Image (cartoon, rainbow, N blue to C red):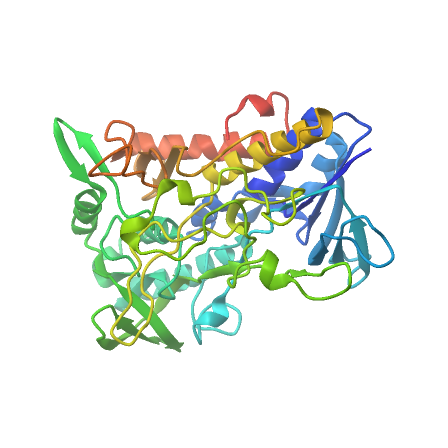
Length: 486
């Protein structure tokens, strides 16, 4: 019997666990460890954050799903991995601390034959003083609980606008190294839409604050695509939407600190400025979860297994190199640890070799450029590929991973909401291939012009609404779930 332990039950970990259980015989055990009891379809937190949905519409309890599928569930937080075993057991294990109400604080060691680290990001609000909803001065939509708080705060702002009080709303990212600019974009235009629907848009100033070098970068270096016989860019396409909706942008910015109703920022040219606000939704930077790696003799090997940012090192080329020497082949394809062939890192939990957008620093040395996104569709594809590799290693004796899911070899589709409503909603539908540009295959643009596209309209909103229901259906492992693509 083999035991596969999956750390994390987000898109990547949950996908991996379901495919493992589907393909492995019942004599093998699949264990999921997650500190949360619920699964959250994070892309729809945007709609929770403007009051269009409530938390029950974007979450469900994990335990019944895992019980139905025969997956062992531990509601616990992983704190250390022992990939070489310990002095008392030769079998590798992971140390966890339970977070469920009945066993909260209780420690346990779970042995494994294969380990998938899909712990996702640590929301690093502490990187910017005053950032975040817990002790800070800004709201967030990173979790459904945060999104509910944001919706309540937005309601207060709308009430003030109805009383004739002008309000400034600042939406974007709260640090120079943030990722998920797409989520900030979505929330910006959903808020703008709600203000128009409430009839108070004329009294509100909306400011989009981002570390992007230009609009439409989204952490992927922007996109170029063919349209009506011409080549256009995501920059032009995005700028037109900002002009149409009257949203002001502050780009190439790093937020230094935040006080009540006021934030201070530095721009790429070294200028320092401040901005007052009545409402601010600023996303935090990500780092890896606080997982320690311990050798058999008890020594700390965390810096060998994990990158300095806390993400797991995998089969990527981490050699420092200038931008002009970046290659698509730098990116991992099997997500296996170079030190331990039975340990994998997927989704946000793996350490990327370098950004996708060009890295930049201000004259003071402040990094102001997006970190690479790797959520959603890419995370699901990674989770499935690693699960299928482990199945081959268990059932067929494969010594190395058999399935690949390089971001430099996969396409991705994204539907970014720009306002909810079945008759008045809009969304930007975007595709790109590949996610990581490959300038050897696609000189000049890095991506296929025909397989990279962008379009905005009502149909996009219908598609995003459909995807919301489809992926929650899939995540619940309902009949036919495996036929729905990642």
